[in-house]
Image (tube, rainbow, N blue to C red; front, side, top):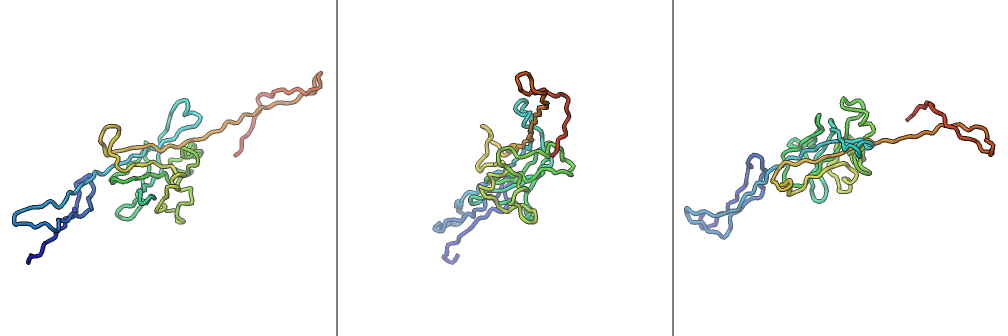
Length: 239
């Protein structure tokens, strides 16, 4: 207008269902002269589909698993969602700034939805403790699978008020039980998909205690005491 070139900026305000916004503004070229009734390409808005991530929470008995491969579902497990930002992982929050968490159902599964094309980790926060309606004796002797792994709630990473930490470092994650949804992942095998799943495993440990009960008889003809087994002895085991 008045001999001055007009600069237009286009902003996407809503994405199609199942996709998230392209937040990059598109600006028309400043050196482009528009004649009446003409059009120009200001750029392309690209909407990336949102993804879902289902966690299957299972446990196995260490004494049984090598022979049967059997795993059991874990209901009542608390999980938290973190997203990678600048080399660390930030707690994901909803529109009310509440942490995005999930608790596994009766089949041991929980699903996080509406995930953008970024790297996410799902961290095991805690499992049902004694007094919880879902607590079983298996849970008493259970730990995350793998050496040196802990529940997030049992670490000093938790806030003083018991709330989740706002960020986790890559080193923090090494000591936790977690699974990862990678950035740019849109295939499962050779098929395109936006739905992914992974398994978080725990182990029930066991120990076997063997006791040999015997008595020593008087020395035999060679002058050696004789060791005689004693059967049907009873013992009490204390913890």
